[in-house]
Image 1 (cartoon, rainbow, N blue to C red):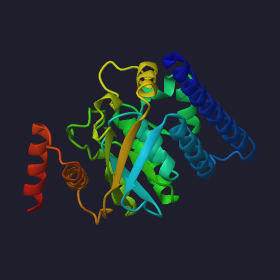
Image 2 (image 1 turned 90 degrees about the vertical axis):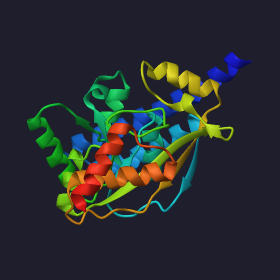
Image 3 (image 1 turned 180 degrees about the vertical axis):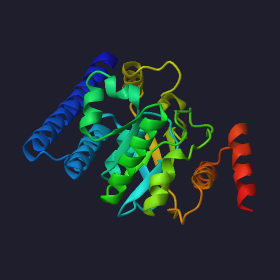
Image 4 (image 1 turned 45 degrees about the horizontal axis):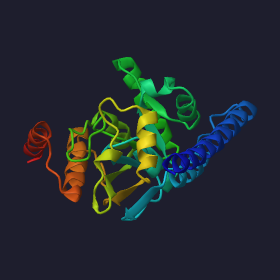
Length: 265
């Protein structure tokens, strides 16, 4: 019975991925015909794909707060690859991802077609990424990033890095802090975290065997840059998310937040 249930759930996920591939091919064709990036089309089709994938994964969303309209730079704590699926189902968004994801079989191709921007090492590449972010925000396209730079098990927060907030400051784009937490049977669902030596297939099978998970998405009040330093803004977003989740900052993060507060005093 368990194997049959897993097979049925896997078929639904595969069907959702096939739909995603169809959307990606649609974008590829539109780009070839128009010779333009078609970023709005990418975001809209990606949102539809994420909505279907959310259902197939049995990822139950509990959303509190107001989903913002207009252009925002979303900043969230990072627990799992499911974060991207969930946030992307709420609004048309483009994401930032580590460069390695671009080379993942199939998933890398999907993320590229969705208009994902990839973070690569090196100052010159960092400048190019900043220019790409600024261009998209100027075009009215919302973006989402995870300023911790890695995933955690959800019990703590790492330092929020502010280097990617410069485009929001330059364009006057509001920051949208988002607090994410996974729950199962009324308790934190640590099994939903994608950390350490986890691989995508094993994590997916664990999720399906557990009957999915519930993700609480708490949209906090937007923060206006108002020309403030990027690290100050990063610290403010981090503190707001930590307070909403009721978790303590890791020692390094706490020292960093205190230093930022002193610098503003």
